[in-house]
Length: 617
Image 1 (cartoon, one colour):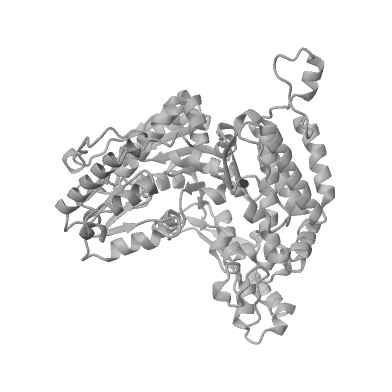
Image 2: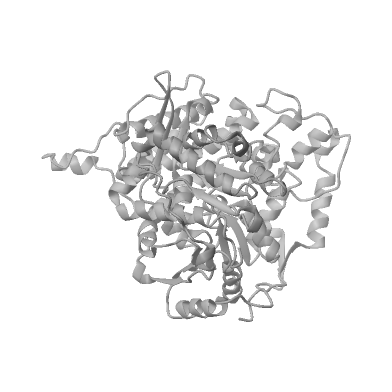
């Protein structure tokens, strides 16, 4: 209790902390905490982290990272390169000498390549390692009051003076009319502070990206997975692969995607290897392609064009020789580290790529090919675990193909092994056995702590209107859709002076409802769109306090706080069953129907929780 970050505790926080400590002391390595909105899971996690001495905390969004580090200043956030301006490029912009290698316009304000992600240190040999004098290094960061709320991470004055001296002698500055005083690159500074501090907060994407590098991400005592129900989704997003003709034609001008259909994973693997080989060859790195082919043969028993025989094959000797080897989770993790090292350590790869493609484009190419190499290795290690989830065509020509893993448990293992203990937190775990099954945990070895909501039931009642039986066929009927639109129109009229939210299950459904409302109610709608920034729509809703605006969207069931007057009513058009026409979803459903219904309940409860945010709401 001494490590609780606030002066007072909310109801149940103390008893939950006792239960967590008892579970860890009893030998549990994994704890799942399901606690409702408003409970205060974050301070509970921080109290456990401070008690154990060191931690990594993962959450789903950059906004939540910012919120954590604002509430707990000793918690250092690490965000991705695209969140920070490149100071070298800013120098060129200030001196009117900036020119992007990709963008047509000379206007820097219209350029999307001015962040650290596209900085010269990514591809230009003279700016790499110590070549960029803005960059600071992990070894130079010190720490005081380690492990306490007063912890401070800093660069000492002597080291700072050394950086300033090196900066003053930098040739890059000679051609600049406007010079600035030294300051550390914002990206590397915040990353080094996060890696030096005892307690760090990441979003899932950057944590998963850093995971293979054991040196930069050493083991700590506690791993906190906030919004833990999203772990499977985040890993599928990180591990999955999309090959887009539009994107890859920038590197390979005659690039084409051959349609091998949904069931021929072997031919798709060969296609991916062909793409990998071609890009490496075009950038003068053919030797790496040869090295990868040898490694796959040795490690995974994989050779291009060799299709594993069917089980009924009588030639057992041939069968054993050609069958692909399924590798363990630890081997997958080592493979990721090997790939990262292979692309990071060989300077000629970045140098040759930059020479043939240009600096900015080579950044995209290197990132894409490293991901491609990793995915190929993941697939050949266990072909049955991968599915061609989508093939998009335009004018009978394939323009995009997506591949995803079905079972992420082998990938989760490397996440769970990063720390001695793991605390998984969410308001919506629901069925912890289904959750554990999907991320590779044994429920018997996991302590599940569930806290009921203390929000009054009368404040959060669900009123089923039973307008129609809304299966797929009925939703194609104009009569049914008109009945839905009329019901929505009536409810909006009843709440004509209130803000609210309408949850649809598709944009098609959204557009039909919008097109069949009264003009008065249609004008109140604020619509999310894939082409519009979600934050802009939410800001308009929350800032126009005098207007009775109503959000309508198929994608606002998470990460939205519509407390009090921001939503006095909400409409859920139908139970949000996952789309069975999506091949990945349907394959998961066929493997485990419990997963399918768990996902349905998860989304329903998440949507339901957007508007009732406290006991008094």
